[in-house]
Length: 154
Image (cartoon, rainbow, N blue to C red; front, top):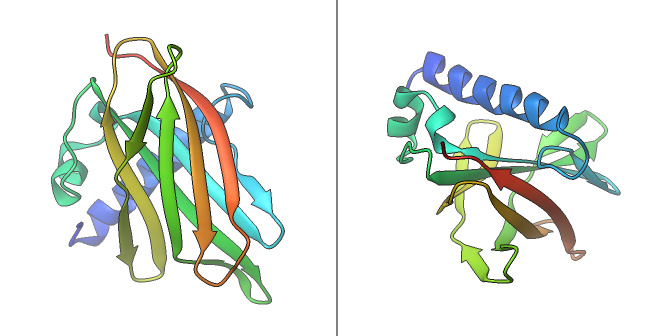
């Protein structure tokens, strides 16, 4: 975990920048928030070599062109604004040949931020069709987010 404020701010900045860049790629790419009633799910998928070394060490993430990472956060609309909420999250993905993979998810809970990370191996120009199964802890309605992401390793 990041111990100093500069590291945390850098981590959140890279996630925001990645999100903006992915949003510019169009609706079929990762990054476009999905709204489910009072909940909004934010997600991004990218290669871990884009992370700054200090952030990767702080979060125990392997930096590599051949490793992908997905970040997910769930926000709930309240009278006082959007609030991060804990959730049970399952991530799976299939490639274009139909091979299915499931991913281990880590929860990061830092002060007022709650988000989820998962890392995985990727090949050059590999296209993955992701499915996120999300159940916020204060809800009985599961949410499903599906998206496609292509990874480049060269």
